[in-house]
Image (cartoon, rainbow, N blue to C red; front, side):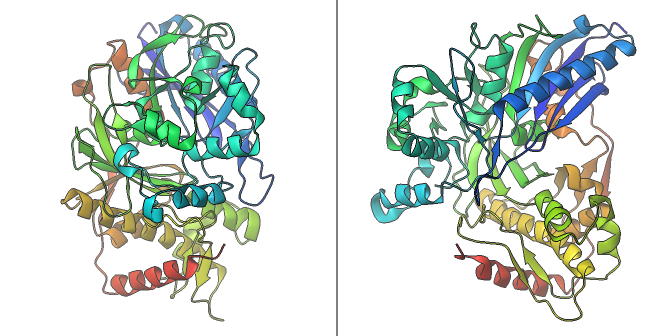
Length: 503
């Protein structure tokens, strides 16, 4: 058991996880997971406790290390740690004490709708894409700069705290790295290019915080972390079982999954079906400005001197969260495990169309005022039709984004790599293949996000060479032609229009 190991922290919206991989095979040696609690103080607000996020990671590390030692591995075998995280979620904390100013404002949070409206109104021609040429992103409650601006507007005392240098900002990666590398006692305040590209404050060309963008949002530069590449030694862990081990990889979760799927060439894409649904399409070394409602973002940068790989992204706010809603809010299913059998019990949704726009529509519509809509119900409709319509809804949202990617890139996607919790549902993957008309490829190893973080960390310390990574076994779902799909997609587009402008 002397082989070198690489570890990965995977801090997601609903849980935190810690993985240890063999550096030789990239197989998982040990892992542990802890659920994260969300709070909803007001309609549209979504928060998490930053201290709980940190504590959950520490718990995962302890349990995994215990398991590792039972299996006769030494902690000293771990040569590097990578971090991947939920993106855009915004944390502000005291740099002297480590105490958060307030709960983390989670990426799903929609409290900033009016802030977004005010910002759009302040631009020439009231253009929601006014800053897109610089940062790749439209105005939306989704992104971190808007959340910081809301906090500044609603907590005026923050301005003085920021100016004094007492409080700093970070996304979840920055919060974790700062704490793990010493916190108030010399913690390193950094982020990587993938996370920084989700703030609306980083210039996509220079990969630096842009003074004009920061001035527009009235965000002081001194509160922002230093921007690093996705793969380099940032610092060492100062306490706990991993003391002395370097942190050498950092990517936002969707970029990590792109890397974990080995989407290393332009024209390759992946979709992660988690709480939301996120499609990333590798566009190579030049950013592609979307004309069809997508985001331009950083895919990864594997070293300070390595080329920056850009991506087009289509973000869907609600995917797996719609299944959870069927269970927890409507009570029409008892567990997520029965979704596949219920949906398979009917041959179609029989014109039931569900648009799960609980917090508005993301790409390609960008309408924060849209709300969830179910159309086409008749007395014949049952819960089984609604469950199947939920699977179709996620598939149709993906189709909208893939169509936009094809137009922006000028090349039609030929296959889609998938991962995430919903990909255990084979009926869903077949529905997705049918609706897209291209093969869906599901690797047997589904932890692409953690794998991507481990690859970045291992690459930085020369334990891995990207060219040597073996292709992993996978399962392919081939599309089945159907004359009814086009008509059903038109009904979906009608339902989308009906969902808009409700709030």
